[in-house]
Length: 314
Image (cartoon, rainbow, N blue to C red; front, side, top):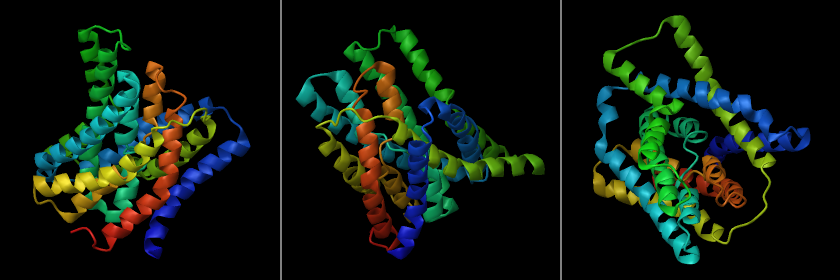
């Protein structure tokens, strides 16, 4: 158990430091703008490119794994959406609730934590889950908002907007470039390789610190009643569900299964608030879901990592 604590606590320590510094320094939320730009457009893409460019191509085409992981995410989204819709009858609010239960922090927390826990082989399933889960969310959010009437764009503008979000996202561009480099056997020059390595190493600490600062600076105005469903769905049900679906889908390496469960067990992504703010729906309650799942995940992630690293997953 001590080894698991030593693994998890530095990550949450970085989040706490970001939270603490933001509280005492009292900089506005906008002050994080350039740091977030560095993380999203430079550091994390460098990490994805570095990992994927050195990966055997055969490992990048595990379609059964991709379908199983994406299906489990969609099942959680659908379950919470139905709960929300039964309670409120509103498609737009139910969509944000579904995203809060299904959309984990797979960008900021996922890559570094998975690689640290399971080693470099975890990088490929991390990248696959990230790309296809994000594609799912990029499609689901505008589509459901259009159905609800919240998004007034035409069908063609909506489709173009979805495709732009998918193919122009820095992480996905980096993934495409990394896969291409792996296929053609490209090796960057020494100077460029060292630059990529420096940027990749900066990704995790910067992302976690910025996440803590964002939680501190984003006020909590309303606690949603749905929080009692969202927290267990996100932190307990989703990792268990992904294990069951992967068990039915095929025979995958243990590291891939453990990585998928870890990614599913991550707290709600801060992007859920961004989507809520974009459409003006559930804006005051989305931060509560992010903060609550992050706090509870200290215990649940520790539990899941203990189960996985001690061979309790069949």
